[in-house]
Length: 243
Image (cartoon, rainbow, N blue to C red; front, side):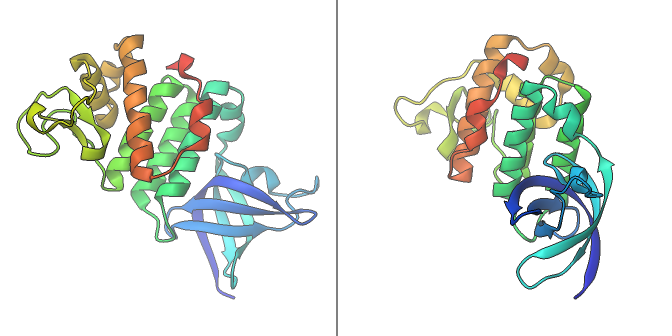
């Protein structure tokens, strides 16, 4: 069986048998990987703690017929303990790894991998509020996947903005003449915040107020779930008090 090595971030795990675990990871070079970590649930396991969700590791694997087998794991980013110690960070990280799991495939994406690792690192270091960190991650992840939203010019006609009617199904803000009846309008400050989250303008994000952050979070959640075409189960548990 071919042996290979890669950097990977753990997205989720499932129990297998008495002592094994199936680990789903997003890797730097090999896309999404599902592999068996044998014996990691035993207390004597040498690398069980390195293969928990939110951890980044250098892993060595044997290529199997259905599932690969993890033979080594060295920690590169021990973010799990810091993230799980804070409820806001934990719930935000849970949405991030669930999104990465749904938005990537076996071919993977280096950009998605780097974005996720950077977002988890930021949560662990408490660089910004967990809620805005999550919203920024979701907008950027969707953009990498080809669903970049427009928060200025009309997403349908390209007419110069600003426009205030937001329609997730149409790709962002739209001009009044093409807006479906009853479409919600956003405040200009909310649109400016959404643009800042998308571009990583953290100075603008940090000076925004709670009302606009709350409205922006609702927009991001609706836009994300529309394009993923499914509900993110972990999104309902996000602590938005730590914006």
